[in-house]
Amino acid sequence: MWSAWRQVLLVTASRNQELWIVPGGGIEPTEDPRVAALREVQEEAGAKGSLGRCLGVFEVRLTALRL
Image 1 (cartoon, rainbow, N blue to C red):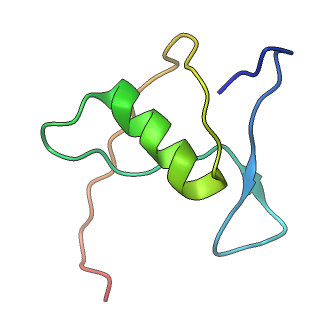
Image 2 (cartoon, rainbow, N blue to C red; image 1 turned 45 degrees about the vertical axis):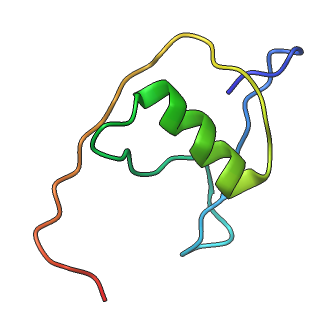
Image 3 (cartoon, rainbow, N blue to C red; image 1 turned 120 degrees about the vertical axis):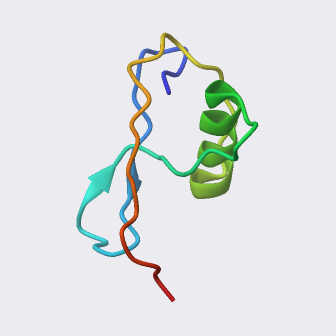
């Protein structure tokens, strides 16, 4: 996500607080990727903003359930 000053929002990774990452997460089956991106930023960083161009949608297939 870019701010008005062309900055990128980073958050600390939940599994490694020393690692800075871009916010991300899952998309609900019928959810638009743009809506999901804004929702994830709100959930992970408490920030509201607008999107620039899409850099990509990445799929990760889970092979085992995490409990």
